[in-house]
Image (cartoon, rainbow, N blue to C red; front, side, top):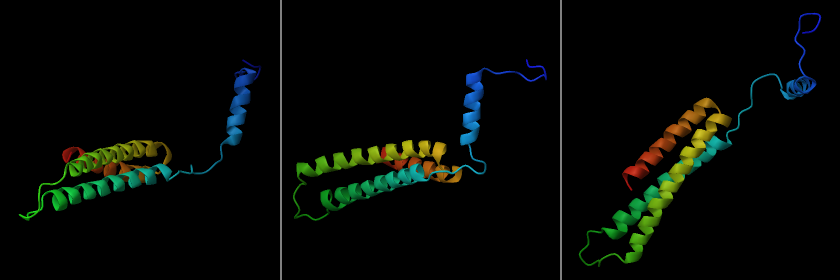
Length: 127
């Protein structure tokens, strides 16, 4: 303790506190929208993959016309890959939505999280 009743800190700690106080700017914290936008873009991509999956599944595979033969095996390959792409995009959307809580505005992060949960839920249900 110093003579005037204040605690004396080690020189390194005082220097680091002084440096950190100089780099902080007063005022509101600037938030980045990048993670929020990335999450929303991945969610939209997951929904688009679901639309493509439905198009291939219902319009190509299961036409109700008697003259159309059985669908080729390649259609099943396309459906399988679209299903995994949907899942990948939905998981990426969820990861970026969770990350956006660290960097983005709180309300936008909540919206991105809700949209990504819907995308993941739709993907898991329809897989």
